Figure (cartoon, rainbow, N blue to C red):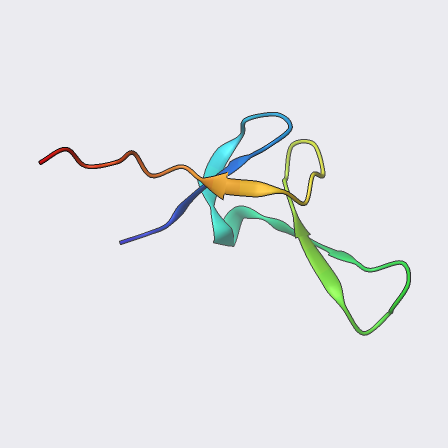
Length: 52
């Protein structure tokens, strides 16, 4: 099952494969996955809790 993510800033909902990879300005060897719409780095789980 695919894990859905929700952006904390713009509320975009999608999967991890849709995130953009942006290089870290302080360390060239690292990169961050950011929201494709607004560039935010904070996400929450968008799965709805199952009742029962």
